[in-house]
Length: 120
Figure (cartoon, rainbow, N blue to C red):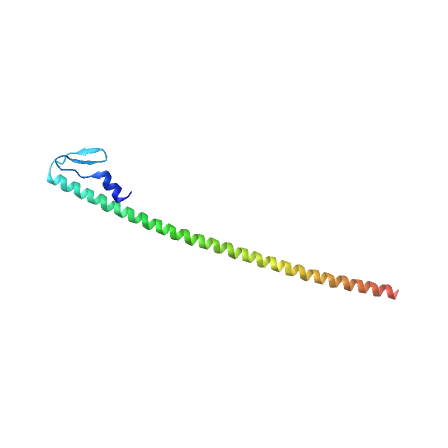
């Protein structure tokens, strides 16, 4: 609740008319009563201000945490994608090497069979 909102809801009237607040009507019987009410209103205003400051600090903290969380999550995603991309490159490199080795083996096999048939 904002301080201005609280002040609008609780207004101090002329002591002869009483003090209005939250739908109640209290007749201010003396100056002492007026001072006590002023002290309570001051406590309310101070407490409301503290709550408002804590809320703002909490909002700022959560905003910072949200930003940090978002940045870290994006970083984790990027790192994982980079690992998978590297893994795909390695798989492709192995596949190319296997294809080359297979081609060499087939050529060697062809030449061996050709030599065997020529010798027969």
